[in-house]
Length: 406
Image (cartoon, rainbow, N blue to C red; front, side):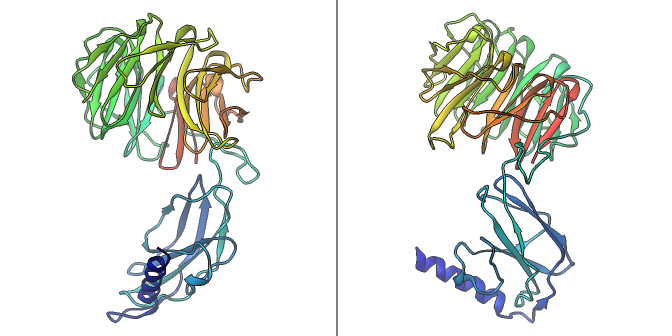
């Protein structure tokens, strides 16, 4: 493997050091900026038409554009365009960056002045990220109840409203086939699926054209989750529906008449949560078992992630009055004490960390699922949903409230 890597590096170096096709070196770009993100950076500079730019980077404080073999972790990215997002970096690790340029496949010219940047968690206040959340212009005058990310952000809400966005800042309204409230939306199996009041279900493959499906129920549907083989929707009176394609739905026995507010596929286990501390689990999404939650609080959402404290997986459920439950096996639940907030928590996700959002603009974050930090509120609106996509956390809520972190 080491020999293969060395050969690849040698080939890349030969390509940019050697001239071919009459090409020539070019001056390095001006105005180079590298902006830290969550496990990523965004590279920007003033580009010149007809010039090809190569990015060089490595962990640490040293980099150059000629000697790959002398620096551990040295990487070359040929032919970048701006702005360029470099993914899969380690938060808390400093990286150095340089860029050179060429025309017509010629040799690389001089390297830019080196820039060093350290990726960091988004959404959590640090010394290098003192304003982690930003409020944007309200998306709508109506409540936005659910959001997901596929190839674009999709938000749904009151009166059948549907919006999409490429950047979680500016949203575009698209035509909805219904005027019934939509309460949740998810993206899986190359399809967006939204659920709402009176058993309404909509599907779309492009986030723009939506088709109403027959669910077989008139009960309110609050949330949906899925993977490549199964869709699961939950709602009022303990309703659980499943589908293999988002079109044909089958009612399942939940074993409860309590309203279910959230559902998630957590570590190959389905978890549904709801009123009066209801927690249901399923191995296949069709047969469900009630487990003891050790709370009577209404529960809103569930997620699964990796604790930085133990480097092991942990399940987390959010709920009313700041309720947070954790579990190492998805079955035995512990109610956390010393709550970060007493506001209702309406949605929770895990990406590089756990983030939950709730009433009066509440945002709390955790890297281990157990110790939580309350972030500075940037809106007073009730936040109903949070999602992550394209290195952006996006939270939406009442009166179209729209906040984001990146």
